[in-house]
Amino acid sequence: MTKSKKFKKLVLVVPMTVALVLSAGLLTACGDKEAKFTANKNLATATNAEVSAIADKAYNNSKLGNKTTYTLDQLNEALNSDVEGAQSLAYYVEVGTLKNFKDVKNIELGGQKFTKEQKVAVSIGNSNFISDNVYKVVDNKLYVAAPVVSFETTSTGFIKINDKKYDLALNPANSDLTLTLKSVTGGKNDVAPAIEGSDVAYTAKIADAREMILMDYEGAEATDLVLTRKVLNGTLNGYGLTNLDGNSIGFYATNYTDDLNKVNSKYQGATWDYSAYVIGEEGAKGIANVKFGVTYGTHHVTDRASFNDALYWEAEEGSYVVLENDIVLDENTPGGLYCQTKATLDLNGHSIIVKTTDGSSLAEKVQAAITLYEGADLTIVGNGTIDGSEADVFSFTLDGGKLTIKDGTYKGSTHTVYVIKGEATILDGNFSVVDNEWEGEKNGQFLLNLLDANGQNGTASIVVKGGSFENYDPSHSKSENPEANFVAEGFTVVANNNVYTVVPVTNAE
Image (cartoon, rainbow, N blue to C red; front, side, top):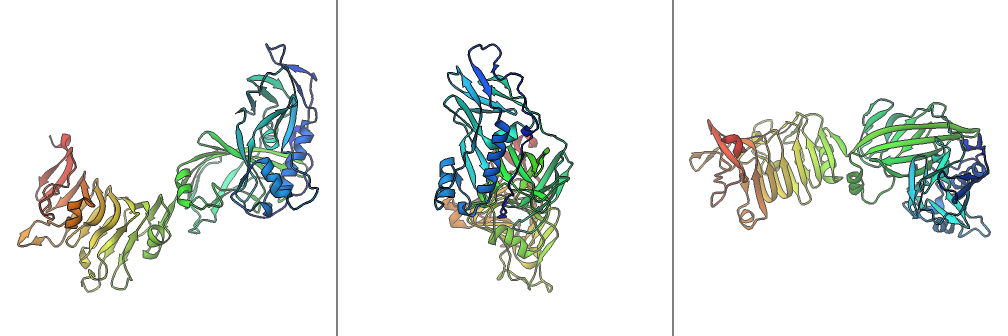
């Protein structure tokens, strides 16, 4: 969240305030007569105070800037460096006193197990985090980070120390809140992708990792404080403090980033288990959980401008680009389509067509419908059509990068795929050209073509592992001198009425 909103002082913010009843002041682990644990009777009050202090002093504090991870000491230095006599955040709360413990190798709260010196990240707004040890032992007293205590004692009222259970006798919070995924805002494309699913599990299709997923719950108030826990692909990702954006909780995979491509790749296809513990001014409102899968990098393109934005001008590595309608390039179009990033282009059954109203050539203006440059790694899917044959241009020109064609129909003038430099791989599809005649021989011999010098020095290549080619045999390509075999090892060509189809060797037997 990015709003610089201060929380009001909170009173009784943790359900532990409801009851803290110890049937015995001194509890002993089953089977261990020596190791003893005495629970802190003031744990609830201490946790309340410290969570409130963190929210009040650190959350969205402009002194902290953004994109910084602090230890507790570093955080207090940043908060108090210009304030004489300022009180530091304790961050930790005393859970209880230990007796005859040789060491605390691990603790467990709320089903989450933490080992000695394990750190956990707690988000404090503006992509800032506190990252310090979950627990520590000082003078035989066990201290645990307040946000962890607050969240992980909402559903269970005990702690395990070295795998042995000690009862804290705390009442769990109500769990009758329901989080409902609502919408997505803030993405680069200003698109609100679909939120699909039920109130149990959703699929969120998001343009990029900076978009915020909004979630609603009944009884939301602007003064509510929300503690969150995020589990990413089954592993604890961290905790956080947040307030409401209007009446909604906002979730980002990242708010600030210097490398969006890296972030998109990291969280692509991630499954998040997201829990929110809502605290109002009068006390705990309850805890709610929701699970959602995320697909980042979906761009919906409708014309030349949006296509080139997604794959060239504002390209983001790992994007999934969906063609929503046919795109026609003609004599009034200022240029072609370009790619210089790693992406998947889903033709979605649509066509990209280059043509003129009078049937004249556009070859001097546009060499190919799509041109790839260095940095491109474009995969074509979606059974669409790319046709430059009516305007004397190619389907693809590679001036660097990689092209993988998985399906579809491709028509060109003399070439469908022309590689100046780079790598083209054809896995399937239908390929044809209209200019079949070369030196009196009608065989479409330039349907696939390399720049001769680069083909010979290895900086340009074509590999064919599937597809059907009209009047052209890719295993005997006369576009090259000497004649080249573009068909990969383990594959062969089957000819039928001047259509040459590439299949695995086993299928041809």
